[in-house]
Length: 139
Image (tube, rainbow, N blue to C red; front, side, top):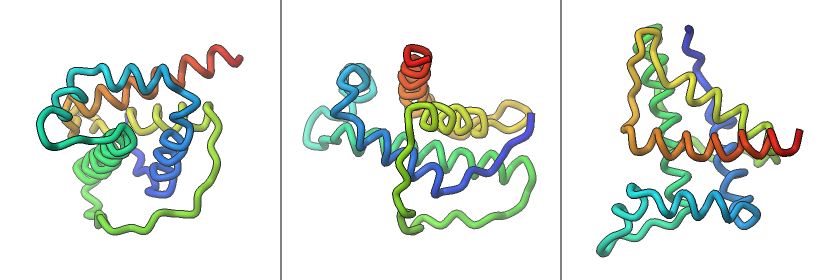
């Protein structure tokens, strides 16, 4: 198992495509909104939209990928928290599924360490499983 460093533009475009298509995927929205993690985060004064929630989960996955890569290869790559959004590229369901699968694979070091909270990891898995099922239904 080797860790690949994913590009910010791929992660950002994947996230934007998921968020852009939420109105066409009410089952995904419902499943995410019904998670204990989402409902707990939305108690009290702090309310998070589903768009922000998905964006944050994917962003944490991106940071976990960078961390796993750094620990695996000790490249000391800078993490730029102010990277501008890349030019939007339209992804289809298969592109999103593949990008999410790649992200989930590449957030682990060779010895199995993962640097993302389980709750956020589970949200990415739910989203990936949704797109994986869509791809199976289409094919």
